[in-house]
Length: 70
Image (cartoon, rainbow, N blue to C red; front, side):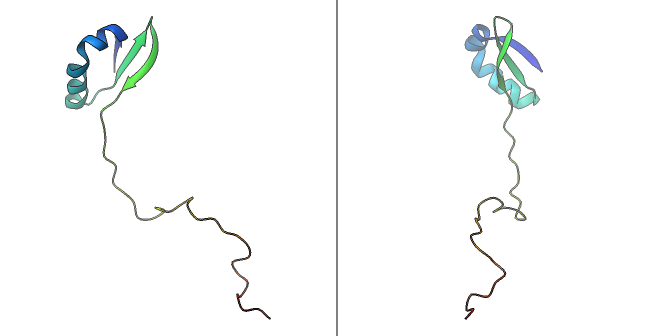
C-alpha cells in the first residue's frame, strides 16, 4: 500500500493508475495527512449461477396453499 498526497496524485495520476494495475497495489490518497480516497486495481469477479437472483424475488401470500382452493 502506498500513501500519496492529493496534490502529488493530481500531478502523477496516470502513472499511478498504471502502477497500481501492473504491481497490483493499493494507493491511498491523503489530504493534510488524512486518508480521503483509495485507488485499487480492478478485479473481474466470475458470475456465480447459484444465488444469482437472491434478494430479487418478493413472496406475497401463502406459497404452500393450493391456488384452486374451494
